[in-house]
Amino acid sequence: MKKPFKKSIYLCGFMGCGKSYLGKKLANDLNMQFIDLDEYIVKNEGMSIPDIFDKYGEGYFRKLEVKYIRKLNNNYVVATGGGAMINNNTSAFAKENGSVVFLNASFEICYNRIKNDKNRPLVMNNTKSQLLTLYEKRKPIYEKNSSLIINADNDEEAVINNIKKGLYDN
Image 1: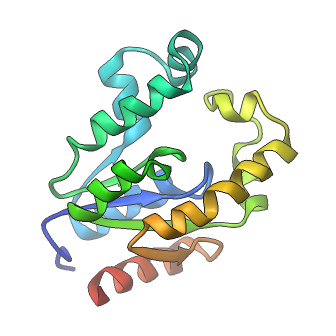
Image 2 (image 1 turned 90 degrees about the vertical axis):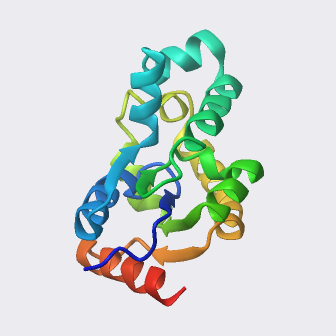
């Protein structure tokens, strides 16, 4: 299958919606390079995300997301962090330099995937109820800041096919 365009595809959505897992498969299908933004930050900063949060705070981490996403604007499939596209400047940049795809998975699916993940400071430091509140707060922002909204509760093949169809149709 041909690449839909020469710009990047930025996958966004709540923690656990499948950005990294589906992003790898999408990149492979489209013959594009896959980048997990969180892993890219860890590699470039030489610190784990929990260590960055502990040492510098969430605000600093969000600035790193902005910094590094601006470097990934040329033919990548980028799995952004759960908070990256809630920043209007970052999402505007991403939309100008590619397509922002919101993987809209239900809270229960996301929560069941992330509830025991010690590499997610927001998960470790919040209750399920608090995470649900965060999910509900972020969802309309993801919707507003995305170019394409995909139901990510479907099986992976359907999600990937819907993303590709949506990218070609836009």
